[in-house]
Image 1: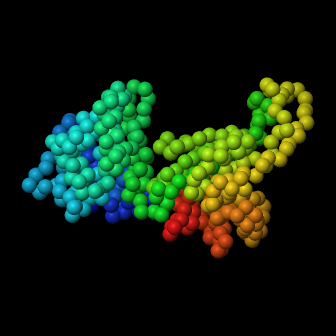
Image 2: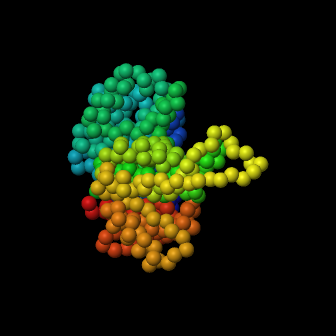
Length: 397
């Protein structure tokens, strides 16, 4: 008989196909969030084995976790030595994810205390070199306790990764399911992008006419966010610089904002990245002067536009690997490729992604990836296109 978890296996991707993730669940009320996270990991191809403390069992039912994961939760260690079988030198687990982790569990692990199934898993995993990630969840006063902070620092020194938490001044909330899943992908990634510093510059510039009006465009920022997530999943040290946008920004990726092209120019001195990708839709012109307040709508007015500096050549001076985007309208494929190749040579870029402006703001698109060696047509959602661009350009660095 097929278990319900098999119905969603690899539903979204195969990024975690073949990976076995042990999820240690401890006695935080945030344990109720683990169901969704387990299911998302399965949708990426992972097998998830839940391990529960007695306190966790007071908050979530083992049977419910069996339904979510397809594996009976480990609630006690038995003569089968589950902690060694999974986490030992010859164990078959690829990672221990403790989600959520209380201050009590974090401090026990840091001090070698081994008195629950979860802490036993951690003791063996750390000794055997199995990757361990911890997602803390507690009141912020507990999180700010010097002993807890010191224990977390100790664990970081041992190579343990921390995911979140989200601080709101009262609580140190457990990381979102999205952040946890993306972080697991990053930790387990064997991509050549792992540990590379990658900057994505996206969104639209907004050039003010007066205090109310501006010159801008229809770019949503979706491609930039998709690229940033794809780079993060591959283990890259990812940063996102975003202009105006109409899509949510991932809170787990370091983000800086700009409004005008001049704002962006002022930020370029901070570029020290290995790779810069620029899907941003930047203005070619800006008003020569900005009016104070709101220009009256009772009559017409003259608007003089001055050209702005091209950012790609300035970015190229700061980074050796730069990917630009070239959007055109009303031209054929050959002419689009010719324009992209001209941009490639003029600015000394690694690649140019060419597309028609009619896809701006839409969920899906069709682009042509132009490099010195040739062209590649890519179609799909913005997420699929982002994955394909990174795989094509950096799959075998």
